[in-house]
Length: 299
Image 1 (spheres, rainbow, N blue to C red):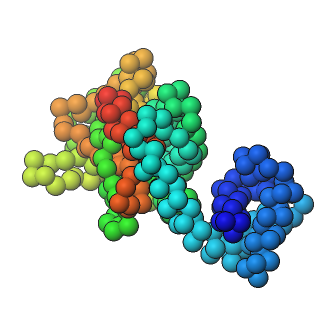
Image 2: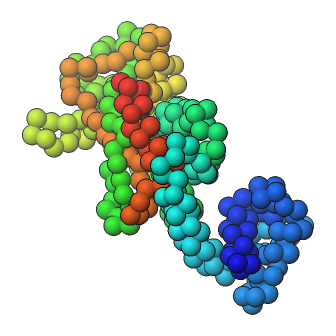
Image 3: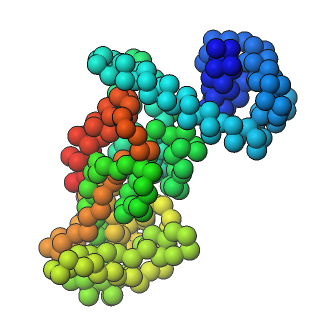
């Protein structure tokens, strides 16, 4: 049992980011956490942490051991969740990674509202546009936009469908005219989203079901969608934005939607989590809530 206690404290130390943070969470002294880790290292015959006066970081052996300990701890957590599944209260730490802009404006407000209804729930939300390894980085699930790559180790569920729209400021349209067809885009300035040294095309569905990609003329390329919306408001050109991002600016009159008679591209937002025979109640609650409350925000 002492060995299991040492492993649990080790995992908590890694997840908390250091001895002091783990001690506070476990209601122990920093010295007690440090001694437990030291005993564990002595028993294993390896050093698990690089230590300085200010911080601790995992050694290569520590990372290897953590990945395997985490699996065992998750099995224990799963067993606890199964026993608690019939109870109303959802408890425990829920770690979620999500795209920065979509997370900040759409997903995070919905998830944080769960804290009011579930006092035993803790949230750890990470905003990052890169694809992370859910198991290695210790996340319960991720929110991801756009097509997913096949991965037999992951389960995915559509939680929202996002519609795109082309917008511009009234001043820009007064000066340059309102485009009526996709061909008209060739005669306009556009603000282009650039990612990974590549300009991202504007995509429009066709009657045949295929996608038409357009690379509009542009003198302004940005890797941040919120900045693209701001530049469009400033009259810098046409912008291809998600409807939820443009909505408030359209409502205020700062932007005007154009090409509204042309079918809009729609892409999915997914919740993605490690495949498991049973979904933890906290994960099910969060994903069910997102799937219910996100769609009305997408228009």
